[in-house]
Length: 195
Image 1 (tube, rainbow, N blue to C red):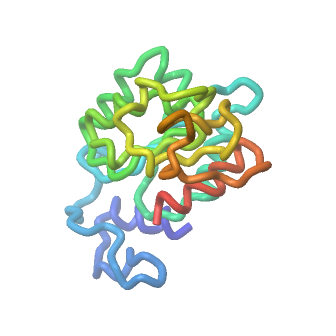
Image 2 (cartoon, rainbow, N blue to C red; image 1 turned 45 degrees about the vertical axis):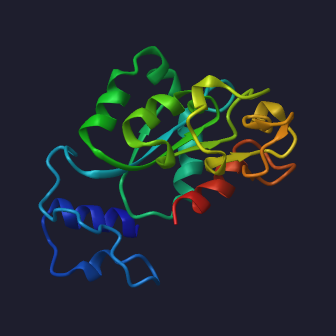
């Protein structure tokens, strides 16, 4: 609830001090450099972005709920459903161009948007969690550094071979917990990305 409280305080323009929005236990403000005027329809604000994957068997809302339960950040999150972005990417691209985006977390098939996002926010700010059906390197995420990948250690459908060096998984990639479900990858990876 602290995220919601902080956002509401900012929207209402109530900022007696930055102590309101300190990151728990760090003594540092979670909104360094932000203009403390109320948000105007979310324009020119600072966000993290989450893009869920294909919804066959697991609805996007379930994926977002899993993300939200693992999210430890204080910035508001803008969620995009991959099926909607795939059919019309204008809203996604416009949002990235019109707002300050700190990190973009792409899940499963959402990882197919990696290079498009990187062209706007920079590759170092884009993270891929278990890119779907990644049997090998893919041009759609070629710009993203290996260290920004969270993949299953052996399952190619869950990203094990998303970045390959000399025929093997790049050891710089982070491994999600072996044997856990695809959705569990969100629970594992999101708190490591958003610190």
